[in-house]
Length: 496
Image (cartoon, rainbow, N blue to C red):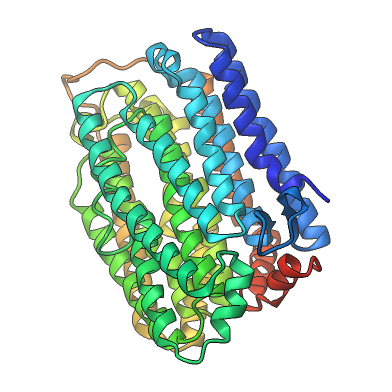
């Protein structure tokens, strides 16, 4: 029995516990936080290699057979996302060394960051829907405290909006889980897939699917349930914004992909048609919101919403190529969006403001920073040959293959508007002359801030120049999603 599926959960848990034992020793907490994040990255890479080599890896806790015991399941989708989450966790841990205030570190920043990473990994690897709910709650508690840590007024306002809407989502999620268990007598994903497929009347699964769509839709920030996100993600320290922006909404997208490829596939014309419609509305409303903003982090926050639309576009189209496009897009977006937030933090450190009105002259004074911004910004907009171009190309090609011309048109127009928003940031923050009188004082950013942003930019360029290996992984992940027999067999019979 391989312990690999549980290591991405256990390692951050142990590191968080040791950090708490370290008490107020700032140096020890920083060491444990960074070491825990990199150890988690090593475990995630080992898990991805094992899944790629041997197929789906299942861990039955206490050797209880499914569906009676708790199982951790790592298929390619889960292993890929655990690995990307570990990359972001490591980058943010290093960035925090140069950006986090001593007061926040003294109040448990690193243990909270590790608990958040544990929750994210647990959600990706959970083999039953109740434990998925538990991991969502772990993430919610850790992220709420991270958002509120510091206790500033604007932070508390954002944190309250964040937790209120996510609590509504949790209540709906728990209600749906209760109905599911009361009706089917099981919560194991594989067992549910078998039993739901054998039901003759699609009415009950469809009604339950709508409940899960709303619950996960709030967490993923899809239209019209996204308004908590732009109200909260610009309020905490940049390192917190980056990890939340990179990972949390993707767990919601992951949950949607998991249940709408494994459980609710009886009436795809209805369920997935609705998801496709929501994807288009999410893209358009998110990018229009971004175009109206003049604050660096608010623009990036609205763009999270619009980009979620692309990710669920592949689920709505529900073809192997479209799902591969969604998987590729999630990887690309986690790297790019987290990096854009990290770069916004460097800009704030250099100029003392997030407001585009107060910024300027960075291209002349900080050319390396300007180039660092252009890489993820152009990738987000889909400019070739960066990673976003191939992500969008796969989704557009899948849409054309299925003759879904309206969603393809929406995706292309939103891509142009995204480019407009990134150009707006470039023109205001980097290209125009610096304001004659600065409203706030900045300080030179150190290597701890530049290094993670440079590494994430290098990964974005590498994916763009050599998209083949990642797209091959994404296609095989999509193959497992569209043909879940292997997943069901691995969990229920122990055969990958």
